[in-house]
Amino acid sequence: MEMTLRLTAEQGRALTLLAAASGISRHDAAVRAISEAAARMVRADRVRALSCEGRTRYVALLDRFAQ
Image (cartoon, rainbow, N blue to C red; front, side, top):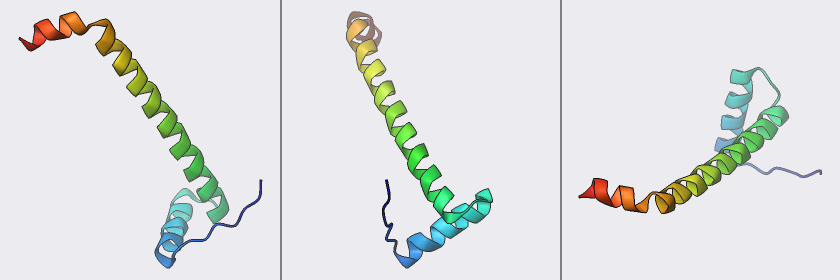
């Protein structure tokens, strides 16, 4: 899918710094940043789900520890 990415001057500078630090193009830096952000969100959602499952599963034990 094709799109135009409009950035503020500050965001453009940040993207340039990110690309330079990684030795890649600005395009590749933007694509990588999007992919990494999406992966972090998916992992965070999974951790939250597992935490909720664990709290539900061990509620009695957790209540005893809290006393």
